[in-house]
Amino acid sequence: MKRIVFIASALMVSSHAFAAKPCDELKSEIAAKIEAKGVKNYTLEVVPANQVGDRKVVGSCGGGTKKIVYTKK
Image (cartoon, rainbow, N blue to C red; front, side):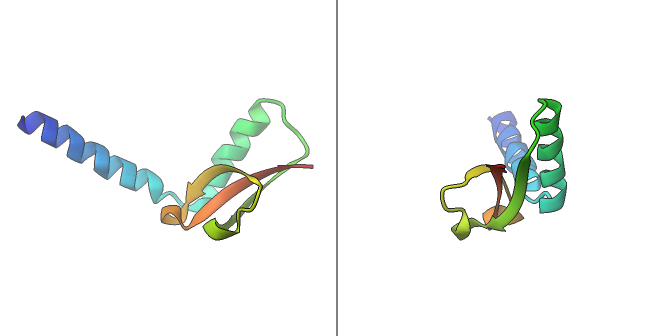
């Protein structure tokens, strides 16, 4: 039982650390993945979570207060 509690605690801490990743760093990682697939003519933009609109969300940063949106040109 102690092992399960420890594992659950470790997962919660690691997920919190992942969510705290700086927006610019996450945006760069997403851009690298998109470009590795050969996609060109796109934009990634960091916007407040309440201003996403109908754009496609490809990431979340700033503790969930900001979203990274993808737009094809």
